[in-house]
Image (cartoon, rainbow, N blue to C red; front, side, top):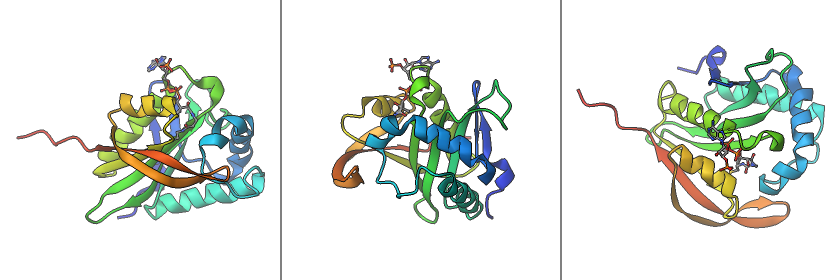
Length: 194
Ligand SMILES: CC(C)(COP(=O)(O)OP(=O)(O)OC[C@H]1O[C@@H](n2cnc3c(N)ncnc32)[C@H](O)[C@@H]1OP(=O)(O)O)[C@@H](O)C(=O)NCCC(=O)NCCS
């Protein structure tokens, strides 16, 4: 059964994690413009028109379609203290490349506004997304990769229970260079015995 688009929001003590509609493109763009230097060095190569409202409008429509088809869940972090229609985007957490059948797995990705680091917001968000993935979404295994010197990302993953599984050599093109990535994963907790 395809996932219900209207259930694509999660709440944590401080955050609303939600899909955003195409008319929120300017807010998402503002987040990426403010964090160009922060996110660029750890992000896969981006299309030429990435920093435009047009690209984001089409990407947000694609996010809704990918969720409807069960392919990906790309959530944005908003503050629960502000109305969701006007809250600035604080970051994102995504489950990409959701695979079913005998794999039941997805790739986890995340990024946070540099000005909001150091408050535990991303650990809170990733923890909620993992619980959703292993609970209602029924996934069994989540994978996340990071650059070897990305210590903040490594710390978030460790904090929420991911374990290092290896190193993928020259696996992602970032700012024109093929970069190694540390491979980490977390598997679903065992169901309690009767
Ligand atoms: C990776 C990234 C999301 C981590 O952000 P972060 O702020 O370090 O992570 P959290 O929001 O979970 O915050 C953890 C920090 O808050 C502190 N903290 C404060 N209050 C906290 C709370 N209530 N709960 C947990 N931690 C708390 C922790 O001690 C930790 O501090 P430290 O950095 O001094 O150890 C961020 O650096 C980022 O966006 N980087 C660029 C994008 C990126 O690398 N993405 C991953 C690519 S694989």
